[in-house]
Image 1 (cartoon, rainbow, N blue to C red):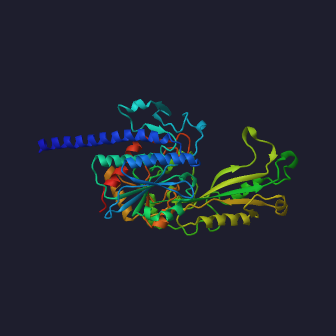
Image 2 (image 1 turned 45 degrees about the vertical axis):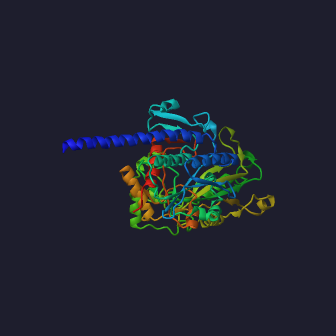
Image 3 (image 1 turned 90 degrees about the vertical axis):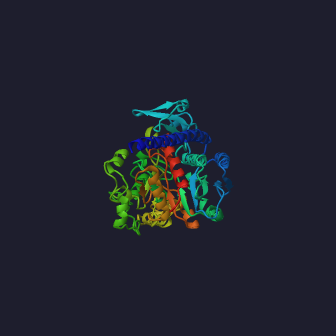
Length: 497
C-alpha cells in the first residue's frame, strides 16, 4: 500500500505544480495586456478617451472568438460581446466598466498615471521595480500602479485571460456568456436605464455578475448580494451679495458659513444618526438577517485602526448593520478662502455637497424631499436657482438646493439558487469559506438590469481592499490577478446542479 501511495502523492504534486505554473504563466500574460490597456487614457469626462478604449476592447474580445458590438446610448457607448449562443444553456451576463476617474498627475508617485509602474514593498516604502524582473519569476505581493489597474480594467483583462485558459484546457463552458462594459460608470451611468430597455433582447440572461470593487478586507473569496444606491444634493446659503470686510460688517452681515453649519448640524444627533423625520422609515431586520450580517468576518478594532478613529457613529451596532441604512454624508464644504489665502471677510455664500447612499427600502427622491422639507422647517426659503437682489431683500434666510440623479440600490436574496451556485463554486475553487455580504456600501448602476431584465444580480469583487481606487496611486496586487482568473475560470467551468 505504501508503495502505491508514494507514486500517487508524486502524481498529485506534479499536477498541482503544473497547474500553478500554467496559472502563473497566464498571470504574466495578463500583466502585459493590462499594461497595454491602462496606457489608453480612460477619463470618463473625455469622449475621445472612451472611443479609443472601445477600439481596444473590440480587438481583444474578437480575438477570443466573441461577437462584439458598440451600442450607442444618449451618452457614451456601451460595449457588448457574446460567445456563440446555444439554446439549451443558461446565460450569464457579466458587467464591468472601462472608464476611470480623472487624474491629477502631480498627486501620483510616478510621472504618468497611465503608464503602469511595478513596485514591491520594503518596510513602509514602495520600491519601483523593472518589468525585466518579471521575466524569471515574480512575487504575488508585488503591485501594478496606474489608473484603473483595479477599477475596473484589471477585472476585464482577468476575464479575457480566464477565457484563454479555458480554451487551452479544452473546457466546454456550460453557460452562454454575455459581457456588457460601461463607458461612463464613473459619472453615474445616466443613460443606462434607457439603454437597457432599448437593448433588452440582446442583454437577456438568467443572472448577472458584476465584477467591481475590492474583496473583503480578510482577503477571503467574497460575494455581495447587493449594493447601495446614491443620489446627491448641493446646498448653498447666502450672506452679503459680495464679500465684505469682517471688521466693518462682522456682527451685522449674516455669515453664510454659520448658517450652513447650523443647517447641517440640525440633520444629525451627536451619535451620527439622522434625525430628519422619516429618514429611516421602512427598514427592519430580523434576528436571522442580523446573524447573516454578524457572520461577515469584520474586526471593529482593525477597521477603526485603519480609519484612525476612536469610536464609530452609532447607526447600527456594527459595521455591516450600519450599511443597511441610508447615509447622509457631507462630501465637501466651501466658503470664502482658507490657508495662506484666508481673508478677513464675511463670505457671500457657503456651499455643501451632500451624497445620500440608498438601500432597497428607501427611495432617493423621497429622501431628498425629506431633506428639503427639513431645511424649510429650519426657517429657510428654498430655491433651485441663485437668488437675485430682489429675492434676497424679501427673505431673511435663503438656501439654494440642486439635486443630482438617483441610482437605485439592489439586493438579491441570499438563498437565490444562482447565489448558492457561486458560493459552492468559490468554496470548491479556493477550499475556504466564502464571505457573503448582504449589501456593500458602494454603488454600482445595476438596478436598471434588475428592473428591466428581471434577473438576480451578484457582485463578485476581485481586487485588493487597499487598491486606492479613485485616488492617486491606484494599484492592483498581482496575487489578485491570479485570484480573478481563478474566479472566472471556476464560474465558467462549473455546472449548476
